[in-house]
Image (cartoon, rainbow over the protein chains, first blue to last red):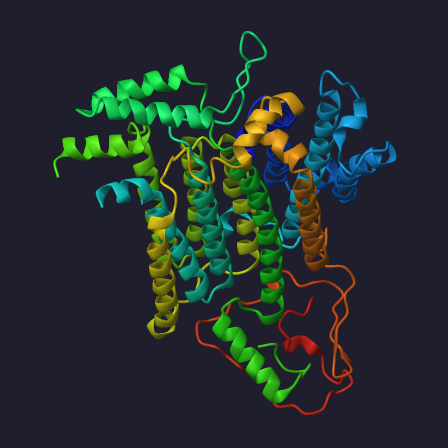
Length: 147
Length: 174
Length: 249
């Protein structure tokens, strides 16, 4: 019997919940503590947990390094792209009001904050996973006795 | 003197933590230990900022949705503090009188929030701190691979020998 | 000074005592103890774990200081990701640190004592703890609390300030995180191979096909060893380079 049977079973239940919790923190950052940074770190922690229990090779099949590389740039592009979009719509950089102009209710601000927090989520999550891949791909796998 | 300590104890604790972290950075030879000391130092600086933004009797800066849906936190800082000091002047005998009057004063005024601006700055600083830590650790790993050690004394010795004798591919790295 | 007098004078000057005072004092004491333990320990594994404990304790103190967003981030980042990265780096380097001779710590101790003395000299000028009228708490921060419901209408004012009022700073922070990731990837490589780097010293190419892994490098002893065998010429592969440590097989 695999010595890590309990860990594998429990993590198969937990990792989806961790990712869902990360998304919850992301989208409820407007109403309580949370936001892009915390959510990005939580999602990265879920991926790192998968790598710790199932091995780095299995994790690279689940979250390929090419996605991670693309995600890093996509996050920054999303953030600055929101600013450029507001430029194109006629206002100054990162002036969210023009995104959904409504004089009675700041809907543009809500849309702008949603987009930039999404950009932050992508960047933070993928950078943490990329750094973990960089460190973890350099060692040979440790047997249990080596610790 | 005792009131001065009671009002500024947080700075004293933070200074002790900062100096401990700084000492670890200066005095340790091992590069990973230096980075840990740097992380301790950074976290104590965050504590300094957040303790400066704390408002006594305040709540976290999340605006509670109220029933009438339009209740704004008007200049609450001035009202709350003036009411509290007035109440405590009135009841100068016994701590429990002052505590009761303080409670009434907070409820009578608007909700007192803690200052959100240091929180925003420190949130940025925390994540930037871990990013620089990652780069620092990557550098330490590369140093270990080239020199075979992460102790500064040994690295200095290897560099000195390299300067004296030049590069020799047939010889040992260290 | 009796306890009642102290209570009255502190109540008159600083308002009612904080209900979390005992928790605050306990957390502060634990933080100081953990910081000193990090200073004195030599096992790197213990030091990395204590750093995670330090981050978690400061996250608990942040909650007591009403900074819930900061506590969330510090717990996730400091006690989570930072510890994982340090453990990963520690796996690739050493497990213990060498002892530092006492004469090397006199200078740092002097500098640290001087800096601490200077900062303690400045402490009485700082605003009182929890003062709602200090310069910090009557500036732009509190203005954000008042204008945010009308301008942005997002209940969490920290998110509103972070993403909207101070959106430029957050953009810079995102770019900094991206660049740090880029830096780590350039140094170590996304698959652990550091890319195809080449280096040449005095006309000799010392680039390797694969980066060495920690298994092939022997741990060092405590004395510095500047060994170099004095072989002047570079033979053209006359003998196998098996003696060279770190050569991949």
